[in-house]
Image (cartoon, rainbow, N blue to C red):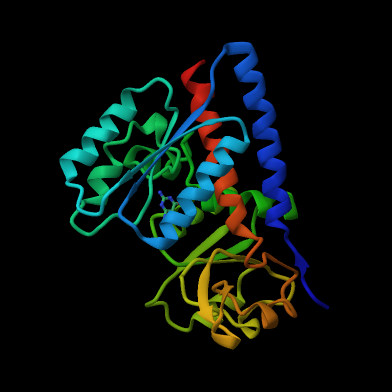
Length: 288
Ligand code: GUN
């Protein structure tokens, strides 16, 4: 038996279509165009690809896209001044500062300078606190997209054993909070976890977010479990080329799991779709 493939690409296209419809209505009825500002500091090639993709999809759903590219030596005061201007700009409903920032910049300080109502990444300390206490928050996009796919596949997640591998602020920790909010029994595993394969084998839901190519093996997976692979890793392939793989060894896991997200075409497209949905939410809240 092989696992059902969870098609994140198609799911994300559906979300974008619904967002686009809603954007059309807000523009016609309230004369407001939702706007997303993306700030990129430096020339990290992967970040440049993501930012370009975000800008393109923002425009495709009818929103306004504001891109601010700053050079790698930008000082903190200049960046904070830009964020203050974006916070005050009524045409900007969402602000995203692409991470990682160059090491001379204090990421926590920068993120916490964003107006929490415009924090479409859900990284501001007040949104983290709201999520952690089960209140209405801006929810980080990758975990939100992962949760949407899990809910769509299972209906209720109540009582399921979930293992999140990875404890990052961007994915692992908010993912754990969301699964807890849906009444899963949640284990957060990380690099110091003892006997990780045994921990993963207990899980009905596995969310892999460690950034280690193909680390999770098929024989770690409980038969029939649902596997959400958040990893996007580029590894060398034949003929001097490269290929994208997740944190899960797909070919072995697909033989055991009940359902699995592919890489590419799983979680990846959901992240930007959820960013657009969060921007729409921020706009709707701003305009009552
Ligand atoms: N870098 C990698 N993922 C993300 C994300 O979801 N948001 C931001 N701002 N930066 C990232």
